[in-house]
Amino acid sequence: ETVLTQSPATLSVSPGERATLSCRASQSVGSSLAWYQQKPGQTPRLLIYSASTRATGLPDRFSASWSGTEFTLTISSLQSEDFAVYYCQQYNNWPPGTFGQGTKLEI
Amino acid sequence: EVQLVEFGGGLVQPGGSLRLSCAASGFTFRSFAMSWVRQAPGKGLEWVSGISGSGGNTYYADSVKGRFTISRDNSKNTVSLEMNSLRAEDTAVYYCGKHTGYTGYDPFDYWGQGTLVTVSS
Image (cartoon, rainbow over all chains, first blue to last red; front, side):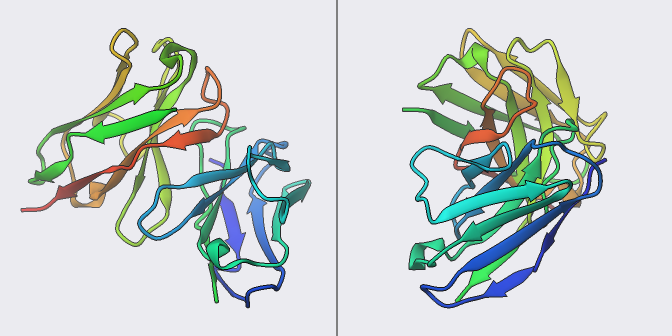
């Protein structure tokens, strides 16, 4: 089973700053990685798929990249609505479609 | 507009059974794989089970294999999860998720609002 390790567990930043979230896969998943955002009491929202492709309507302050088994989600100039928990998910070695444990982005 | 509405959750005793269903609308249901993903209180997301667009292929997490059964009815646009031999650790909000493709080797683009399953005596 492919294990995804997200870091940090919690990231404290201020509005207007830049946030960088990481996700490391225990084995190759190619570019088959997605990022989701989940706000309290809400369902997850797809942000990024194929490691670096933004979902429809996603603001361009969100960007993602990858190298090997290291994946990065970057949010430039954080807005108040960006504070949430972010999960990565691989779907290359499916099943199971494993999720990372999440990174909480807080003020 | 894509809509996924889950129902069937509730309180059940350990060892008991429950059947969850998810009613889908707003897309060509048979063309997309569907999955169930759960989230225990205060915890992260855990994929539970998936099914291909035709229903011919089903997949399970090791934690539920042999206890849960996923199925779909493409004539009624519904996907279901039959849960048996429930344990306390199955307590979670269960989400129905739509994959972006037919097989399941793709991400989720839509999620239902979830239904809470509580396993407790």
